Image (tube, rainbow, N blue to C red; front, side):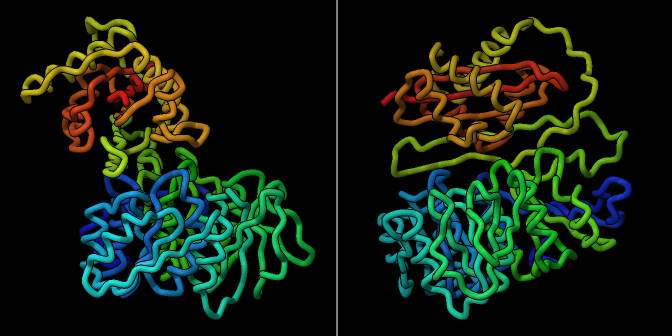
Length: 476
């Protein structure tokens, strides 16, 4: 079991699989998670390493994750944790963890900037080496050049982050390099070493004579194909959200230690567990470790469970470009749809009324804390309404098209110097949502921040309560 798991995990022990899957004694071993992807990577590190001479540091920025696809192999070779930070600033917790680990070498992968490297070099005795190139392919080559004794090759699509993360723990455990295909799906076949596999569908990587393909129609089918084909150990398995699989990157070197697979979850489902070849490999008992916000509580509750839990999460962009802060609390994801409870009578009868009630309640909190109330902005309100409709599809700060939540501001013509977002779902009224946010440090920090404008979008959910999006911004 993972080191320090009693301190870091929830420690639940409940039946996981539906009848007939073949793992009736499998249990939920807990969750490795933090307030955002950076903190989740720190939690994963703490679960596996008291000390490490080497650390891999990758960019947490969504647009730069592809730079880090090859990093798992290097982390496995060095038996090193993978930590994340925003590319232009070194998170305080990350710097402290690097020092606590007693690291002597830190590899900066891809887009991690010079400012981060400069701050790290101020740590006495720490060697900092940048592994990057002019583009994602050059960065991949720089990372793979550090590998020794390569035993095999995985070829993934040039932008196929989920596919790469399905094989990341295996690559880390078995000294496989990870190569990125070109935009047209081709690859330099002279670079293939040892046993080679294509990962993903033919749309992302073309066929190569004599090379087996592990792929399917989407990321989940590819995940199932990988788990079915490769020699994983299933006594312990990791579950990561397929919608935002960055946590699988940070966990790849930890999972490699036990030869464990990473399953991608899709809402309440784990598609790979519907694959007969995968099911046949799962032992009678398997411990499941959830990463970040992956895994729905309903999966661990009996059919007569209590009503859906209220849930909330929030995210904030930096007030300046050099001081990013991200609040992305891995709250519980929604329980399966069920008949909604009757809503209590309230003065607010439309979603617009509820939105203004949230606005007024938050401003009351600000006044009680000696702060000026926020100003309502109609354009910001439109962006919040767009996001409220989107979080019913994908309860993330990433939009359904994969872009940042803050692109909604650009969509309505707002140019911001700083911005923030809180989201919530499952609450029956404005007071419940505000109370939930105010009892969560990250969300409360957004509400009591020094943004200039705030607006709220509300959408009625078909299954339970409302979805809320609270957006903040200061114009540029």
